[in-house]
Image (cartoon, rainbow, N blue to C red; front, side, top):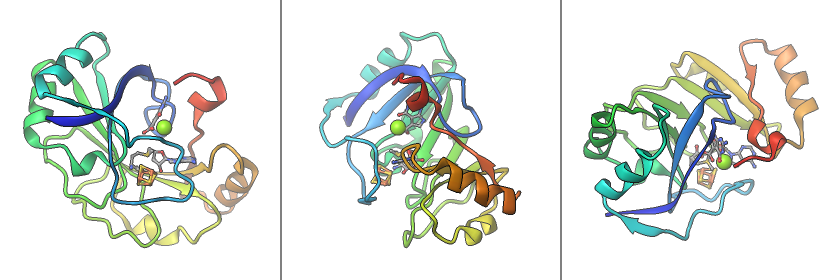
Length: 181
Ligand SMILES: C[S@@+](CC[C@H](N)C(=O)[O-])C[C@H]1O[C@@H](n2cnc3c(N)ncnc32)[C@H](O)[C@@H]1O
Ligand SMILES: Nc1nc2[nH]cc(C(=O)O)c2c(=O)[nH]1
Ligand code: SF4
Ligand SMILES: [Mg+2]
């Protein structure tokens, strides 16, 4: 059984897959306490893998996004296999501190200051920019590097930084701008 905060259907609001319809599976619980965290995730109900897959299968999109909380604490190859068996493409939003099952299809790592990265594969790096030094994150091996304003509040600052450091791309939390889940 796994503790699930919510399962919902929306558009991926952030990063490389922005705009793609996806089912979000939000796990309860995290190993970090980011001061800016925009998510209430502690409450949840216990669900079996069978229940999770059944809920996800209600939506015809192929894309599933495991998030939280920190999903890396709670998932394993077995759950990802079960989602693959339903024909799903499995993405994860992770702070990067936990080793992940190798069968995940897309890894979005959002590194946090002072937290060691424990991943051996990253597809996109997506940093919440609050003016910190982000240059070392470019040493993480990934295909895409995004900076995301914090709570849509400092977009001008992020744009100015990216114009000076064009290795980065802008990720907006478009679901917040659109006021959708
Ligand atoms: C709530 S976290 C859950 C997944 C995982 N714990 C992590 O941090 O990547 C999902 C995404 O939202 C980002 N995020 C959290 N709070 C934010 C905020 N106030 N503004 C912008 N992005 C935020 C995180 O950095 C992460 O990329
Ligand atoms: N629409 C939408 N897109 C998202 N991308 C990552 C999210 C997350 O909380 O992990 C999220 C979210 O909460 N909603
Ligand atoms: S790691 Fe993710 S879920 Fe955990 S506190 Fe930070 S932003 Fe929130
Ligand atoms: Mg969110």
